[in-house]
Length: 208
Length: 197
Image (cartoon, chains in turn blue, cyan):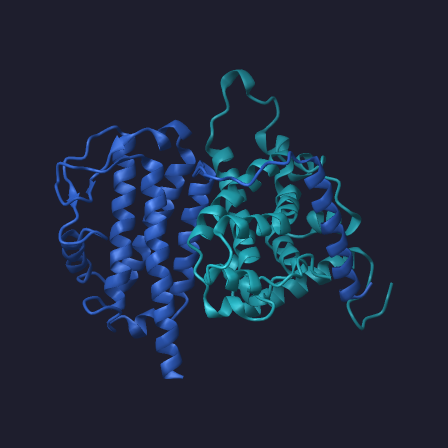
């Protein structure tokens, strides 16, 4: 059997299996309002880790001091991701212990994020080597994923008061749950990682 | 013979231009790919495949609402949606296994035999009636080799597989050849150009 014949045969068998399993399966309608299930949350965290691993395979060290935005370099952006990875993991563990959050993270002069809080953390991260910051993102994200894997579903969806205060008033905290924290972290990771990847594409294209 | 030959580019273009509502586009993609996602998961997860497939589709449903069309997604033969589904199926399956390993068994339902033996792939897959080549592939290939081979059969490019599996393109090709050789040797056939046994 040639390679082509073998592939054709595998393709036919896979088609047959697809048909067989779909015939047995209930004709479930596609989800209109998808729940973020515990497995889906872990999958999202694995996706963040995979996207980050793909970024790490690129020439980060060489471009670390280049500015990605008007204010932040590539190293700052990676530091920002690592800071939030640690913060989200810390929030998840604290919420799980049912400890109230003493401090708030107010959004100031921005509706998209807590700029003042971010700037202070970016300054702290600038003092650390890039390799340490990269490792921090991976360690903290994997820790959050393992936490999600070990938690009963009811802990993930129990309503809690979170530290984020999007109105800017520290007394007006966001109410949500651990699932919201995790999904929010993954959205945040994907947003920045996609833009960093596109930025590196442009830099490398210019160099070529 | 790729299982999913249809080009995704026209649908992605229409979605980007707002010519097709998100839900209508989702329905088209669900109809096109749901059986294949079931087969991928059915080969691994036994009877829980339908629940896992729903998780994969829930992830895609959410992503599809905010899908960003990048230029490489419109290249001929590109299948970014299938690629996303493939990667998500791998992650959801990993999560399923991680969660199963973490969950303590209630005392009154503790298995008499070790969990590994109860949940061995052979046992879990008994219900799935795969064809001869597919069954052999499941038995003799490592899981990542099987994933890679199935992705190739489904029509994903080496680049898409590399991204979905966290490999370099050269590794995809190398491992694909190795998996094929392993399978061919067990089928007692020679690789292309070789002597038939």
